[in-house]
Image 1 (tube, one colour):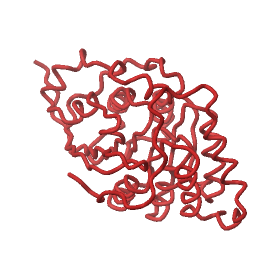
Image 2 (spheres, one colour; image 1 turned 60 degrees about the vertical axis):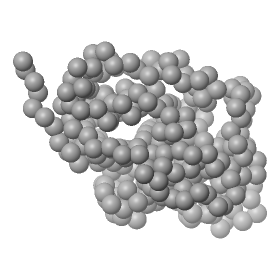
Image 3 (cartoon, helix red, strand yellow; image 1 turned 90 degrees about the vertical axis):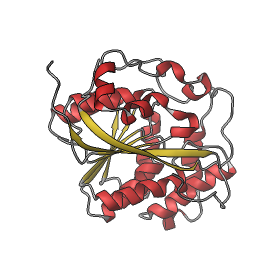
Image 4 (cartoon, helix red, strand yellow; image 1 turned 180 degrees about the vertical axis):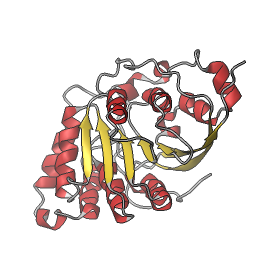
Length: 289
């Protein structure tokens, strides 16, 4: 399914096809770019204008791996439909999606937006931009491995059941983190997942999992691959601790029933991409045979 026609606005600069250099400091440069603007005071407390400044950097200075306005509309529409009290995001990067979705969540009466980020540097940039947008008290940035943080949010009782979760972090961790959430009982009927980058770079292991029948998932429960091996090094080079393995050996809950569909759209750079929208609609009784 295709939503949002071909982008007509100016594109972000293209992603470099080579591996990211160790001295690449574009996220810090973004912070200086935004905070040195002559109209800085106009940005304070205005999420839309902060997002506009970030987009301007992506178009004029350097590519940023943000969700962008096109794909962002898919998720903000989902927020308006689901109206969750709490939303979780895996992968903050510079805070673009946390600003866009946090603002949307606040508008529908939500109480808290959690965004989980492995990189302390990215998290610091995100916090600065969230503060500028007037969302620092509403959006909570947690720093660490997504699986460890999800486990902590669950075991401390801070989050019991996931209402809406946006996945846009380390691509191989999509499936392993979802299985962990299932195993912890955080996924139940009514849970909605929105997973980015289903076309660019793609995530066949995740798609196969959320689209599989209960019977198929049961048969693969202990043999499914993590998916870590399918991503090219230039994609992996953007992630902190890209060689890290999951902290938990979670097999998930194969009895959960999902309905899943792809909504096609575009990257901010104009490349085709899509978001997989997955809804948990119930569970089958465990097979004890």
